[in-house]
Structures are given as C-alpha cells and as structure tokens.
Length: 232
Image: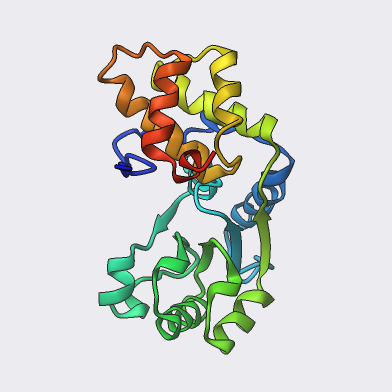
C-alpha cells in the first residue's frame, strides 16, 4: 500500500487557529480554564502558577487552544532551534509569557530541565505543552514537571470527533453527507490524530476531484492512507 503523509497544520492558514474555529467540550475545558487563569495574572511574583503543563495526544488541539488567547494576551513561542542553539538566559524576559510546544520532540531532557530552571530564575511565566509526561526519561525532569499545575486534554467521544472532523473540512469548503461521515468513522480509529490525518487526505484528493465525494471515492482514500483499513 502507498501511504501519503501530510502536515497536520499549515502555518499560512492562521484562521485555522482562531477562537471561532475552536470547539469546546468537557475534555479540553480544564486546559482552557487553567490557561485562562494563568494568563490573567501578569506579574510573576503574584502568579501562583509560574509554569504550567498542558498535556494531550498529538492533534488534540493544544496548539489551537493556546492560540485562541493570542488576541488578548501577549506571549512568545520558543522554537526547538532556539532551545538547541541559544543561551537559555537569552530566551526569557522578566514578567513575560512564553510557550514551548511539543516538549516530547526535543529529545534532550537535560537541556529542557535547564530551560525550565532558567525560566524560573528569569521570573518568566511559561506554558509547556507535551503529549505524555511519562515519555521523559530524566528523573529530575519528570519530578519537576509533575510538580507544576497541569491539565490534560483527554480523548473525546466519537460524536465530538465528528464535529471536529466536519469543522476541519468545512473550513476547506468541503462538505460531506452524513452517510459518508458515518462510513469514515466506522472504518478509522476514533482519535484526534486519525481524524486530522483523514481530513488532510480528503482535502488532498478533493483538490484532484473537484471536491466531489462518494462512498466509493472515500473507500479508495481510506485504503490508500490507513493501514488498519487493509486489515478489515
């Protein structure tokens, strides 16, 4: 089987991360509330949180969620390149907010622990986003991370996943009949990364087929892009 791979997000589509496009449900509400409290206190000495952790599977909406705060609050993303190459003390400013996305991709626990310590010493406020705290190996880092206030975006139910799925497609001007949506969800694993990947595959093939889809055309997309489908 030939499987294509797509980027989950395109940075040129900034509206994809707007508040209007974010779907709230119980599984992400705790993370939203924690971020709201965190950003509401602008002074390091008064902020009881200092550093918080937002945990959730890939494509669970962590990046989208934090970007919904951009209009009202000022913060800077610290890139993997900056973490790898810059002096940690040069990354932070007193009383400013910073975000590090996808900690699990950094692959350097010692460096990450150093970054966290520098943030605290610089009196900067920091949001750390990761897939799973248990993926870290360094005991001191795991202990430090588990002591911070945190919120986890858990997997949601199939109904909410369908809402997210159709929302992604509608922003690309792709509208599927309910019968087709149900067929897709009967044949993929109902989780965040799977539906985002599926939406990207449909968008890709839609550009080649004038965005007209049937059960047969969806069937072909699933067979070409999902290993599980070959085993059914």
